[in-house]
Amino acid sequence: MSSRRDINILQIDFDTNPETASTLPSTTYYDHHWFELEKRHIFRQSWRCVGHVNDIPDDGDYLTVSIVDHPVFVLRCEDGSIRAFHNVCKHRAHPLFTESRGRLKSKLITCPYHAWAYDRSGLLHSAPHCESIRGFDKSAIQLDALKVESIMGFIFVNHNLDADPLAPQISPGVERLTRRLPDLENFHLAESVTFDIAANWKNVGDNLLECYHCQPAHRAFVDLVDMDTYSVEASGIWSWQGGICRTENSAYNLPAGLTESEREFVTFYVWPDVAFILFPGSRAIASFVFGATATESTHQVFSVYTPDGELDQTSREIYRYFSEVLGPEDVALVENVQKGLHSTSYHRGRFFVDPARSYYSEHAVHQLHGLVFDHLRNFIPGS
Ligand code: FES
Ligand SMILES: [Fe+2]
Image (cartoon, rainbow, N blue to C red):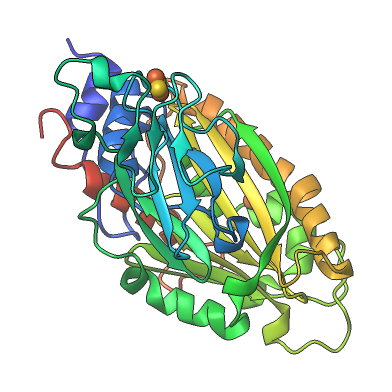
């Protein structure tokens, strides 16, 4: 007889109609085999936002991130270009950079373990004593590169060098966002807060992508945003949700005299694990990356960017609200859900999607599940 896990994985299906569909099975939120498939077919194939061009403004500046279990680094080069490589030395796999960010002290990238040195195109330049090693062909050794794209000033990387460019896939959302903030590539990091969450990355994404839970779980948020104006739109690999904020509310007050568009709260999601959040009443944007680190753990990074790298009074209030109130409220919700997903009494839940796509409609969550299923459907054992 099959175990419950076997049944879920071997017999998985997915209804593409959001109005009649149910979620992916709960097993997909904690099964290690399923997560291995996601690592291979989602995270090594998709675009990940790793920072902003002004995080590495000058020649030799670098930053490091891990995409699940793959450490990578992004480097500003002499010609102004940005390159990305696996942060793994070709000798014995030590990371080339061990800090989260910094600046190269020379033209070369030198491994701290045995001092193999690479140039900025990734070619091995020198290895101590290599001339006495039989058959050692320095020219055959090169760091593995990642594909890089910069959109609205944000840097995206992709393990798959043949991946389709990201910009055309999300251009409607980018156009809308840049209409509000046309000079995002000139913004600078002002604040950042991280949460290590005991939950699968999809669980964090599910919670981000619907506001059905806002009324019961975020009392101040529904006072801030007029839910009658809230809408959710999902298309391709992106979604857009938001509404108009009230000037006076219990979350934080906005300056008087703002236009409706300046009071718009927006979350622009880009598959698989980033969203950009517009701060109403302020020239500030946050990137919200919810990177899987293991089957049931997610590293969430919420970073706010402003024109001068400073928070004004309104954006400081918003940042406080997100980092101290809304963020912790959501972390508690998804960690509680993660526990519930293990219960034998839960298998999959019905999406709440109404024909009018009201503020509470969960069609953007259905989109996320559909994208996961599409990326894995040909690799599910038994399919
Ligand atoms: S591991 Fe990098 S030089 Fe040995
Ligand atoms: Fe929430």
